[in-house]
Image (cartoon, rainbow, N blue to C red; front, side, top):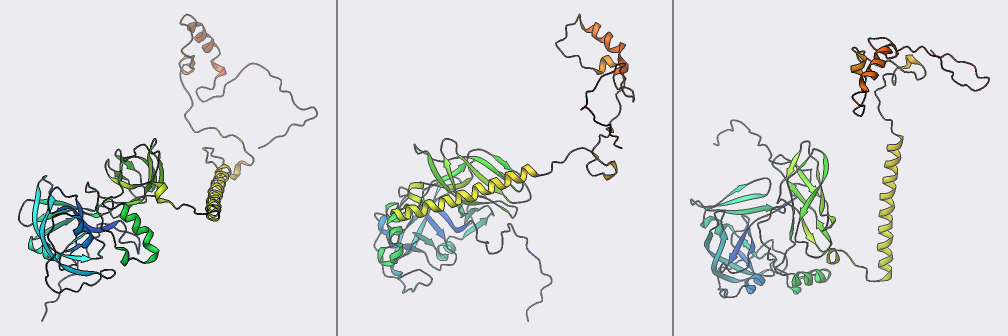
Length: 409
């Protein structure tokens, strides 16, 4: 019979996200790799522990010159692949990955070629078991792939905010596979095959205080273009919280991006951290194709403008009518009746009146002794040593004719 459990140990989360958003900012684990030779363009190779075998898309296989023709292998039926995916056979080649020690680790790769597969390369459990690949994960998305018993470590990523330092080569879908609604999107993929949006990184270390938003100076390959769109990303940290930057229009002359820290403690955004991805707004945003669409977009923009202006006006009015706290001790005391003045609780001034009165730096030295003499002679005019000042003079205060004096307690 199975042995009873002695105790149940609750494991602490490395991060905590809102309900229903546990996958926020997460991507499939991937490494930077070269297939066939080191001279080939790098590819995003996904390490898929849920796949029994290693798979390569037909489009990606055709894009690499010199790869062998597929051979007939096991009869395999693929599940959970979108569309009419079909296995054409397998090839044997070499896959190379750069290590943290700036070496190229070379592996023999057996991959099945799949038609109409969107991902260029899925490295399956067969490959990972053959080379005894291990893994260290971090909540930030930085990961390390450990190669057997060797000292080789391959950098990996499981988050969209971690850049492995290369342009990702994407497989594109064949038009026979795509629904009519996605044809335009597919053509855009074809034009940008082998490209990815360049990352936008923090230009300096910035400490973002708890529950606040800071504008952070960013860097990117702006070129000669002035206006850019920075697409949002979620920035993870080791303490169960995230920071986020919204999708923002940025001017390359003053490139600042707002980043929000919703946690209860301050966090650093380090120089070089990816805080977004660069997109050309002219290609990214929708464009009106008719006067009717133009009027629709304009009306939508005006409505948003009205909402923003109304919110700002309401906030300004609220600030203007808000009660400003003061140090007056009579504010909350009803015993004093109408507003009067209470004496401060500070200690009374004591000492020589000549030392207590500031004559200013511009008084000539030969004049100062005479002024000090006048001060000391009339010291009773100043409130010192706990008494009120007294002046032997009478002053006429003009009043409105016929006004009657009023005594207020």
